[in-house]
Image 1 (spheres, rainbow, N blue to C red):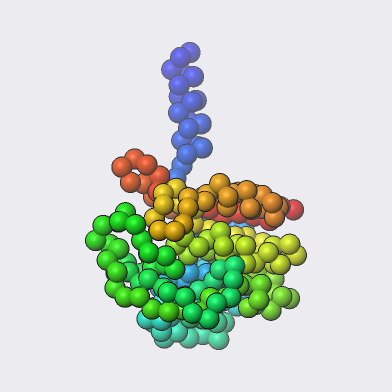
Image 2 (spheres, rainbow, N blue to C red; image 1 turned 135 degrees about the horizontal axis):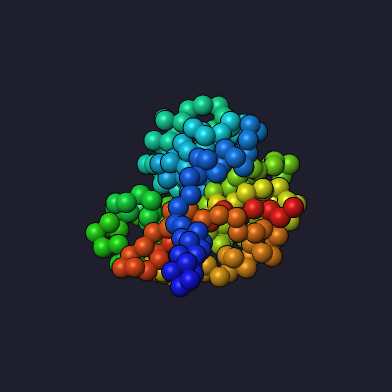
Length: 230
């Protein structure tokens, strides 16, 4: 009897805390054969765009990447007319010039200076300047977005705050956002509770999680999919 109980308990724990999903399978099932329009905010080298392009039928993709070096590589590699690529940072304000910190590990580059969390991986390569835009002020407000991916290294909540028109008008179906549990950057705060509350305020529910990363048995960050409630 006790063995049966603990086996069931183990099954429940394994079910609840499985730390990965098959994103290709998930996305194929979610969108079926629909042609999608997506935003890749913080595109970096284009890994998520590649995932979408190899999994789904793409109608149009809008990619935003603040690093000029990475942006140039993206424009060379993704030269199809279905991809529009911009050398911009996205936030909740419009600003012509803002410092951008480019690190050895390009995925960690940010509008903010890093704390010494990743040691040598965060060696600063250079500082540059980038223009910042709000999605609400940049995109055509008649566009319906099937997926919006946000990975902006400390600026994720502000990115959401800069697209409230689209959220209020229910013009974004699925949002994938990186949620962090440590303070990786100076002049930022740990805002995962704020992000979850913000998504609830705009009628989004947590649908799935992926890519959970740990350090010393402590969760550092994960990617969360939020779905517009029906």
